[in-house]
Image 1: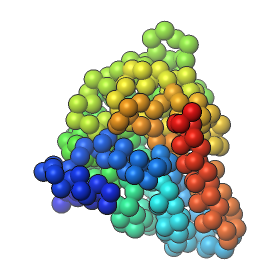
Image 2: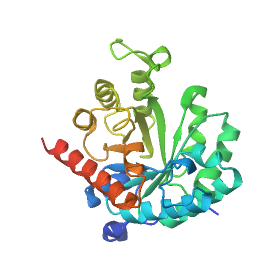
Image 3: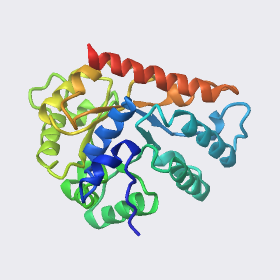
Length: 291
């Protein structure tokens, strides 16, 4: 059965005047603006890194993640579990991922970060897994295999697809082109994303470690949402990324809060510490947008 995302409470009046639900990009913008938060909190859990007062088990991870979600859900627009961290726990990890997405319960957008990329028939199965089984709102995709990699994910305009355009990896230039290149691959790819975004559910992943590249991607793709990992532990310049990346609705920038937020404390105050980190990031984004 195909799941339909529930509209946020703030959108219910607007949706009552429309037969069809909004496309993903419009829904993301509406939710982020309603919450006044463009924070995406990564949920990349490691058993060995759980706080001292939490059992370092899958059951402990579920307790930890439920507490983190409940403490931060009003201050984030999206949660982003990276599939690899759950696959590493085997079948228990898959159940954990399912349970956590169910616990989020459409209170925020869920981006399943799998960097999926394969031939079209395989991608159809990835789409079924991500959207029908896990009930994710969006996914990340690696387009190196061609646009047939992306197309099977785009059938439902209420479900988003973020194409990996410019990574935060230090050695990415060898494949993606350099920031100073006149016509790098990542800029051409951003232009392709823009040209294919007519259904309103296509976006781009752009590493926040190079604000100049965020600006170039935004120039090439002026109307799509961006997902920007790399602020915090990877050292991205938040204010520069925000100023470079935001466009007019629905062209927002989700700033991913990763290790520095999820693991803000190793002690019993981990809930308060993560919430404080998320709120600080939210406020910094809002200040940068206004200046």
